[in-house]
Length: 237
Image (cartoon, rainbow, N blue to C red; front, side):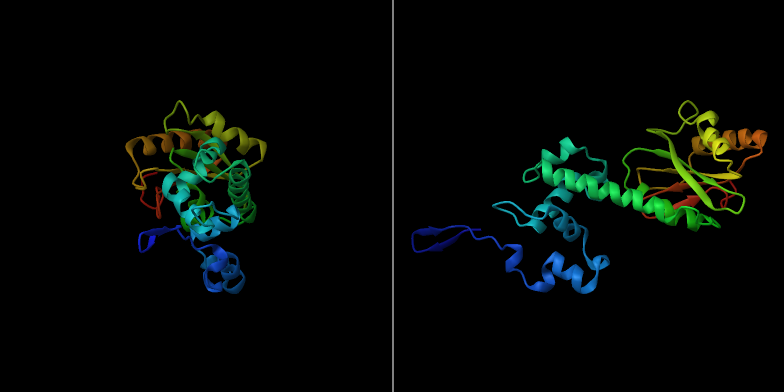
């Protein structure tokens, strides 16, 4: 935007964060109403700290989210990819990656030993992380005899077929951790959690292997963009 006075072009004016009303400044807004009330761009602006000569922190955060296609793309982006974006240097890029990793670890720690009683419980544990993945991640939840979550592990990344999801990789942790049962989980990057023929075949193959070892497969949950499908509830396994 340019302002004119007669034939003279005045310099372009940008609104800085400090010039915004307090209820529009990310830090002040978070202190006043809590972090859940902030948008993704506002939360990211707090991590970024400062903008550039032409963009304030909120505008830079908004541009960054748009460039990477939202939080899904941002979580999958490498540090090199982040720092290639105008206004994101090594310090800001490293801060973003560190914050995202802390969020991922925190989400896993919160649910440690949490009893898993339904597909909804599984969704609550994994949806927020897995819905952003742009490739298929096959994850296994290992449970104790009371249904408490012992651990979660990603067994394969990139696709769901028998060459990648082998019973050996699925059950070695179950044996090591003395898990009584497991729940299979994977995401569909398309956002549609409808099970495919291959999903059903892999599930049944792993269930058969589990029966031989006395470790029950309780369910296979498929994660979409904002929803999920329980193959057990659908009667597919």
